[in-house]
Image (cartoon, rainbow, N blue to C red; front, side, top):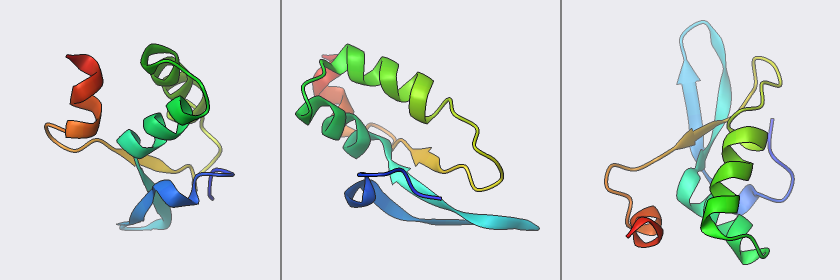
Length: 78
């Protein structure tokens, strides 16, 4: 399952034993995309947490990766 309009934020596929593979998104890219559409950093984070990361759409629900010390997110948190 893919989120409409976010193919450019996909970083790979996660394989899980006994479970179907799921699409993995780069969280920083998703947040930056939301901000490029006019949201503030706080609004983008809130939207993402509630509507994207917080949405269960079945066994194929995508996942989101946050890199340790992600510079794309750190610049907004300073």
